[in-house]
Amino acid sequence: MTESEVELFYETVFETGRNSVASYDSDEEALNAAREHHRRAVHGERCLLSEPTAPPAERIVKILKYKTHPNDLNVDQTMSEEVLKKELSELVSRLKDENGVVALDQLSVEVRGLAHPIAVEAGPQDSIFKMKETGELSLGSYDKETGKWADN
Amino acid sequence: MFEDSQLIHEHHVDEYDVDGPLELHHAAIAFQRLSQLVTDYILGASGSITPPASWTMGLATTNVGSGGGTDYARNSVWSVTVSTTNINEIGTTTPAGYARQTIARTIAGGGIDWQASTFDSTFATGGQSATADQVTFGAFSGAPNPNGANTWVLTDGSTLNAGQPYFAADTAATRTFADGDTEKVTPTLKAG
Image (cartoon, rainbow over all chains, first blue to last red; front, side):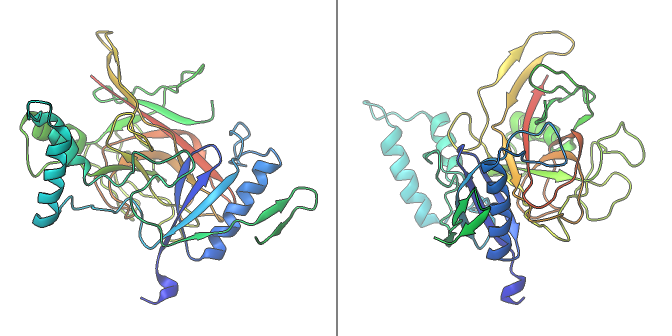
């Protein structure tokens, strides 16, 4: 597989705090799609042109790039013995009460959460994924009067 | 209401509601794996039939239908082949911005996950309902191939036309995508 055939994934962060993951062949394709959607938002157009009652398009604040789908952080839900022991030790320390007792139901929920790909502490305009992005695209700035984009 | 929000009743698969002032009844279905999670994982603590690390949402060209030869069946599977009861995903030849969206296996935990569930005590149609945060597909860079989403499917994994399907419902109308479009889906599961 050549580099041009590698599937690329991009996380779009909207001004509203929503996120989406998209697959494109290139940065250029990703940027063009994002710019068209952002342009619609600036002009008060709808997010889905084929649907007259669709909600408004949303401005885009961030485009993050990944080599794989960021959902695939730990699909197999496995962990090395060494890492698991460390994680378990930290979880037990965090969950124990003043008498040193740990609720097993709570512990099992936290252990299960070790494989979750979504970061619960994400801010409203941050990536929602634990996977670290490999890059970020610059949307540039849009001039509503001229309808032209300028690279930042 | 535009948003593709559907309510699935696990054992009444013809139930379909849209949140908001309108109430529509589009086809919905709970697939075998969802029932198997209840019987094997919930009841029996199975170590082999287990939930995924996270849920994902996909869009399919095919319809839920009503149990006919080319409609979805309880044991439907994802497949690139459009025939019999297969679930065929959009964007598999040309994604043009399409990818599956992730829904975390948490309740009100941040990111995109499930909201606190509610209970309906109605004998015939009641049950416990859970609604996820809205997911957004796109922005599309052009027309994906295949194009035209007729259902959304709660599934797992990010590989197209693969993974376990759990439940699905028809979109309010066929959604065809073009450059700059996004699509929003808010799924609800009502189990009873």
